[in-house]
Image (cartoon, rainbow, N blue to C red; front, side, top):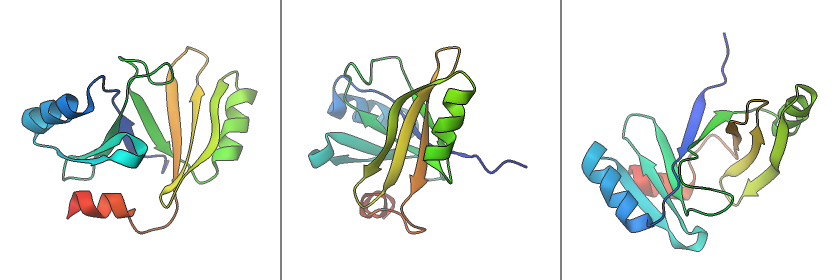
Length: 130
């Protein structure tokens, strides 16, 4: 059985505050804006979580990115290329949180990989949960 769980979902936001309020009211999600990253985390309270990155060329509106758990992002990205996909973002550190990488599958879908820095949630996740 695979342990490649979905661990994070990003929904691009043209207006971070308005998007955050929309999902808070629609789904009762908790949100936490992180100004130094220009990013807002969301949490549904039952284990599903993600974020709202600002709309940009890298995060266009309509491109929701699902992040899959990875024990070895570098190895997974090498395998992506071997299987005909394309690496869009190599393994990159999220300070005090973990690492991520982004690829495009042969069909053109954009998917993320994520590895947590440790077993404990990041300081931002702790604030959001508590």
